[in-house]
Every structure is written in C-alpha cells, then in structure tokens.
Image (cartoon, helix red, strand yellow):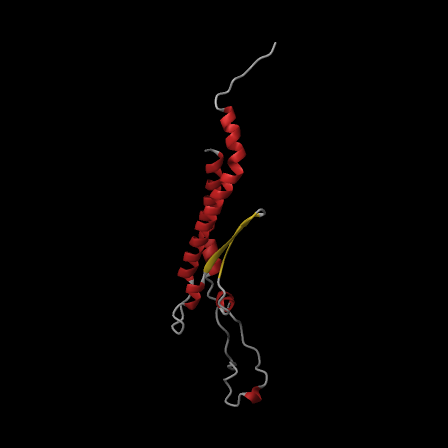
Amino acid sequence: MVNEIDIDGLEETINNLDELPSIMRNNLVGIADKLGELMVTTAQRRAPVAFIDGGTLRDSINARKISDDSGIEVSVGTAVHYAPHVEFGTGERGQMTGAEEYPTGNEGGYTAGWPGMEAQPFLRPAFYDNLDDMKKAIESGILENVFK
C-alpha cells in the first residue's frame, strides 16, 4: 500500500529555496551599503575639525565595499595622512636629530617638553556607537529573506 501526501505549494517553496542565496546576498549587499554610510555619517560627526584646515579630515571619511564570492566587506576610513595621529594621539616627542640644521630651534618640528597630542578618536567610537544597530540590521536582513 502506497500512501501519497499532496502538499500545496511545495514545488514553489523548493524553487524559492534555490533562489534564496542570491536574493539574500543582494539584500545583504544593500544592507552593507547602508551600514557603511551610517558609519561614515557617525565618524564625520565625531571627527574633530581644526580651524586651519576647515574639515579636511571629516570630509575625507568614506566607505568602501568589496563584494565577491568570499563575502561582503565594508571598510570605513580616511586616506588623510595624519588621521592615525588624531585617532590614537601622538605621545611625547622624541629628541630632534640634526639640530644644527635648524639653528632657531623649531623648524624641525621638535618642541622641548611638548607632551604630545591627546587622542581624539572618531572611527572606533563610530563603530561602537552603531554596533547594536548593525547587528540588528544584518540579522533582520537574513531573517527577512528566510521567512519571506
């Protein structure tokens, strides 16, 4: 005796499952773009603006997305050469070498007794400010596709 079970919509469900990885990936790429922009906006809001450069550091913060077969990656940062000094501080300055080349004492950039520059983090706090929202967005993006 053979028992048959007929399930309405089973074939459509199986077809939808076959398309799920592609649909999910496209959705997650879109989420990655939005999260990158969220990070950029937060980091720009936190970045210090020096009077002399009028926001060069702030305006240079950007997001870059890489999407390939191995996954989706979003990098947020800046190419401004002094950004690490702002983010992490400089510490105390060392002894200037070749002092004889700078007879007035300061052209070489060394100031005796200068304690260095305090860190003014803007990228790391932007990440932690948004961490919960990023986790929720990724989680809901995955679940949204699974339970469509």
